[in-house]
Image (cartoon, rainbow, N blue to C red):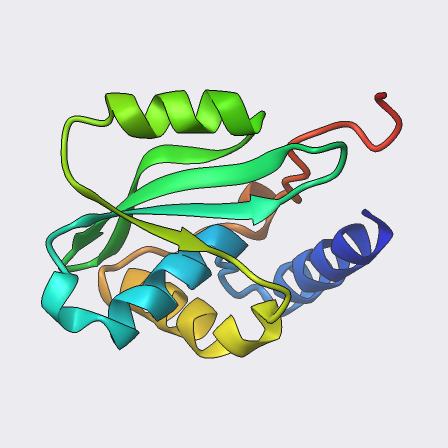
Length: 141
């Protein structure tokens, strides 16, 4: 939690002082984009991404490939594994399931790619719109 807070505060401060846009990009979206880049033949399929969270939970999201990038069909959230399985079974279209590993640093190119696509589409988000997403409270049990 501390590392995330420090990173976001630093980025927000720089964007505010330099008066430049700040693009918030989900780690799960970056994983989905990396998978999409590696598997272009499956591009029309929705991508379900999961990543281990604390306390036996999962960070989850479902994305749909679009010309401008990825559309979050089910935005980032924390769920139990059972709730995630239920959501996947109820999804009306075929899914490609992707598990995010410990190598999130390898998705930096996809973070830049997703932000650049938004830039090309005319998006210029204000620094104040970027907030850290934890999905759960750091002290809840």
